[in-house]
Length: 580
Image (cartoon, rainbow, N blue to C red):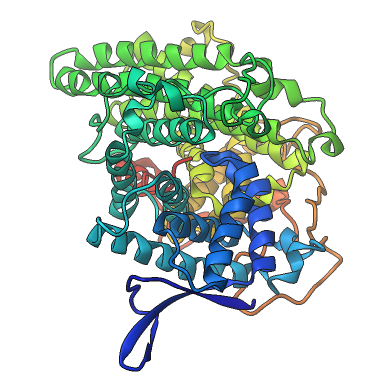
């Protein structure tokens, strides 16, 4: 990639040159043409995950930065943070499929080369943010900087997980938002500017940060659990409009569509609704903690969890049809190949079911053998959510959508898959008695063979993604699931003899399916050395091969004891995965 030097009137360590003993700070940017390609990648494959920018305005931002760079004029720090974050996000989401694209393929020889560049752009964006923190008078907070922080935080969460650096970026975004009064956008004193692109993007940025704050308080097991920074009484901000970017204009007509109509903001708005439920869940956490320490507290705990789960289930039921995955069951891959609303449906369903799993797992690991209907209701809710997530993953793979590969780079997308695997593993080890099954009227199939296929499907998915994360959680979970699969396989063979999974089942492994741009088993292609992000030549794992490998693992000298598995340690490790 060719690069252009952009000069600033502020120091950005450690990249600078010395001319006549005076430092001339520089940031090296891709060429203008390359940045346009990276921007197109960001808009097409990443931006709709957070969608806090106005797509038609982004080319103007790029033009402005490069025009000032060519004229050696100072560049607004906020614009630079936004541009660098977009570049970092685009390179991070680069996949093997992009290497084969006639346009995108001109930038990098491999996806690994693109992914490795991400750290450089993250560092550059972080340097500009450090300057803004140290030089407030010369680099005042701006909406562009906050948008850049949101995009950068998304990249950081995928690279490092939900750790201090990510949380600090979210807090910095909220602090900057207050500084420029994003929390009072719709105050009566701002009526003259309420119908502008800047105001609408401010609503998007603020609500994204607030929603993320609420999600963090309800979703992750850490000292901040149940604690959030922003309360609805602290802000006067209308929710963003349900409109496409093309319909957002300065002082133009309000193109606001009903929620059942597909727009660029369909997922975003439902994410806010889900975050509001999570905020309510966070408010209840302190009472749950007190309840668990009392006599018969487990029963009350289970009842409250059932109530919260019912609210999440109702949220899923009330989703517009365009965001229900059942709507796309009979769609062909050709139809879904470029359909972003299908991906929005996948994301909101995964997000809600992940929260359901998270709520239930906390109870199940504390009370693995608690008797009675309250426990069974929590267990059923957890199983249903886990099944929904595994079905969603299988449906996404069958769609052959380009996002199938992009999601492997987004740890937030995989958090739900890992939790579903943990849930299936835990529930398999604490299966209900036959009497409990007969007395249960819920429409959840408890058939042992069905659950074995579900564990097998979770195992296959985790096998395909475990190499993408530095956390040992994926390998540990894969090993545990494999042993469960082997144990159930032995039990079933003793009772019924070998069986073949039903063909055509939504939970059955995908047979001889090839993703777009993926090399088949009989083909080969040279890959870059160290291209660890290259997808395997095939995603399919034979059920018999899974069982054979599982049996071999059971014969190891020191196999994992699934019965005494450290659930707290595994779930805590998973909690570091990203958020979307």
